[in-house]
Image 1 (spheres, rainbow, N blue to C red):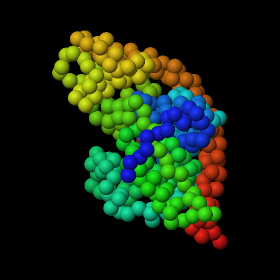
Image 2: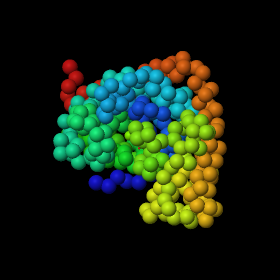
Image 3: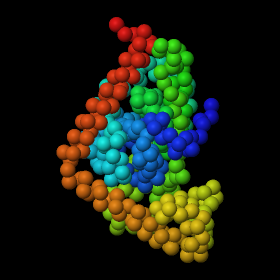
Image 4: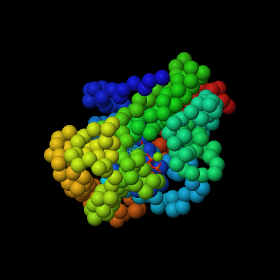
Length: 344
Ligand code: ATP
Ligand code: MG
């Protein structure tokens, strides 16, 4: 059941054979974990010439909350973050779950291909359920990885740039694709590719409290934060009591995640950054990280405030993206219905 490593060499040889799907829940502003975990890879793949689909998973905002207040505005804010990071709506299809009904219909046959035991085993869902501290677990929370399989497979994506928490979901998507292909064949062939995950150098960036940086945990540094806010948050970030700074992800996870963050911003090796700080301790480490992050994000933040002046443009690009995604989803659903002999 191992997932194969992403074919990085192939990406450079022939990027056009890749179709990429990636998405985010509109539950708050995108943060540095998103950027270095997946967004940067999305932009890289787009720029290499892969077909790119970027999903705003609005239905999934409801997995761990009853109502998603202000959703429309959050969706637009998320798109602003995408544009600021370098996603180009002329090359990438940016779309919203709720606007693509045919994608959501794939959920039904896909649900029939997985057992409740398999859903119950998903470690990421288990962790999210524990953290949501709710009295009961909704059916949507339990089944959202299957919904995610529909997201990936509606556009026949074969590469999914994600953070580490998403690996069980990509694995489940491969299982669903394999089972669908075995059970239902269309003109003698399976319909769906088996997608590969693409991890970055920072598949699990830690937040200020030392756990996974996450929109919902109050531990994130937003891409759109001001330089002052960024400095304040990083100054308050958890490190450890050893003075000499080193890069040791297994032994010193918090310190190493801060070192890695500075290294990614400065395009240096984390060992080099740690060596440069050495006996300077946590105070110097934080100073270096603050400067590196603010420097790196400056152009991104400037682009974001430019785009924010024209909300009409955001709505327009979403309408176009929704229409493109719907056409793709309609075609896939037709194939699925043909394969299942459901077409009247
Ligand atoms: P929420 O707390 O609302 O679930 P989140 O911060 O976990 O938000 P998601 O929208 O669930 O963000 O995740 C979107 C994508 O970003 C996924 O591919 C996920 O793996 C990646 N990602 C999120 N946080 C991190 C992180 N700290 N490090 C690396 N990748 C991350
Ligand atoms: Mg999440």
